[in-house]
Image 1 (cartoon, rainbow, N blue to C red):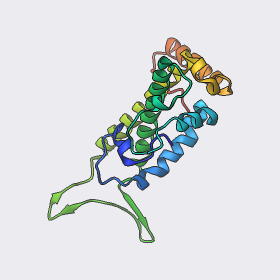
Image 2: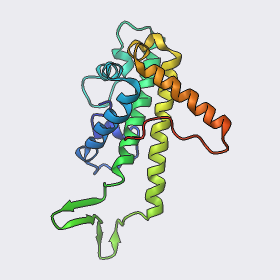
Image 3: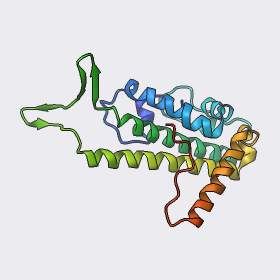
Image 4: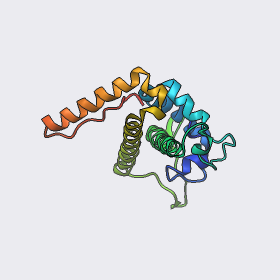
Length: 196
């Protein structure tokens, strides 16, 4: 994954320190498999993962590992990786919001609330939860759009993507999105897979 710990997650999503990475990791894996890899291809994704700093502390930059690339290419590659990390983090949080405050047991499903004697944290209102979900989803897909656009404009730097069926899929989505926007008074639906 491009997001490997809570510190990296916090670079892209405002989360509380108490959020356990294990609680979000399953959603990160689902986003990677069902959205990111579906769009850019496994080979290109694996290249991006290999360019991350090996210390996994969240420090350093991917561009310093892009050996054999010019400094301009390294910056472009680092920008795409950052956009994909942003997408990965936000789409995982989008998925997490549906179950993050729930506890499942043999007694059924309960909502976890940290309230003691009327003080403390309470659950968000439903409209606040919906606004947060919408924000995470829109932010994630927007970052994915940006990454794909950069990759399409700089294909020599993204050989695996350029040589895959994913490029044709992306261009079809792009054409469809533009024609839908031009031919409809409604806003265009996201062109990305919705299987997150």
